[in-house]
Amino acid sequence: LKKDTISPMAVRRLPKYYRHLVKLQRKGVKHISSAELGVHTGVAASQIRQDLSCCGEFGCPGRGYNVKVLQSELAKILGMTNGYTAIVVGAGRIGKALLAHFPFKKYGITITAVYDVDQRVVGKTLFGIPVYHVDALAKRLEEQPVNLCILTVPAEAVYELTEVLSIGKVQGIWNYTNAELPVCDGGPIVENVHLFDSLFSLCCMVTDKAGKNIGNEE
Amino acid sequence: LKKDTISPMAVRRLPKYYRHLVKLQRKGVKHISSAELGVHTGVAASQIRQDLSCCGEFGCPGRGYNVKVLQSELAKILGMTNGYTAIVVGAGRIGKALLAHFPFKKYGITITAVYDVDQRVVGKTLFGIPVYHVDALAKRLEEQPVNLCILTVPAEAVYELTEVLSIGKVQGIWNYTNAELPVCDGGPIVENVHLFDSLFSLCCMVTDKAGKNIGNEE
Image (cartoon, rainbow over all chains, first blue to last red; front, side, top):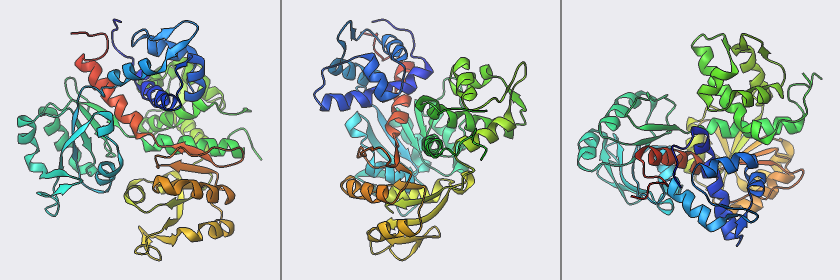
């Protein structure tokens, strides 16, 4: 079961496999081949076998992967069993929408605090989570370290905050701001949310289907 | 320049290439090789060449791709030059957050209307866009067809709405609901927004870096 590190490309695909396995398990499917998983996730079967082998040996020749075992191993690899804690910095529309709708708890993530500068929310709670002033962030991180930060502040506030988060030993930033965060060795890992990619994959498919794409000169 | 259809896997990667090309152009870079593009997008150079060749011939042996030309060709393929119109159905937290923060106009998409059931917003405007009651959707789509629907309603409202959107000849649905939408031949193409994938790619990297991943039994 030894592995080195998971490739940055595999990291992008593992959550998709996980989502599909959850669906399969709900349907009562016990085993799935890499070929079937490929059809549903849009990844080549050989790629799937490589991605999953680099995470351990879950396959069973002839029967495919055991859905339950693979799902639970992927949950570990995706960090769901680590009891990660997270804070939301920025209690604006996006921050509130995530707190209201994203099932963090279901996936093993506990939101411990929200930070904002707006005196109308500071000192209150949002969806049961206490809201603190951003000025308290550095000190509170020192006392109560967290694993993740969900960053939903305006772009102009990003640089200063990233430094506070880095010094506070936050390991990962889920970045909803438009700013490109500085990535530095030893600093937090940054994941930029690119809704752009999702919308323009859709537009690309719509365009392709409508035959308006390149190659049609009429 | 003839092509058949763009593979579902390439569709996922093209928006990433586009985003990176925009960055390069801002920096004044004129040409880029598939190898360099690969380093920045995490896609194998051979894959990039294949993805881009299926969309036409933009490469120039020895010099790589012309950044400006490739960006503008990708913009076409991604539908940015088609003058797409879109509606937002559901004026809750997510709908409002998207209207407030996502730069639709910048990418050639015009939001023409918002729909909701809440009498407090119906008849008013949100960020300059008129809000109509959902009951008016079928009739309005008949009179003024739109290309895309951004769907941010509660899951229980999804099935009825999908039928209305399908009959109304909406070509694509950007689905923010938790519901799996029924996909049918001739109906709208559905793109589900999976924030899950983004968050758990991050958690996977954090876990991997911390060495807590599978393979470590201690």
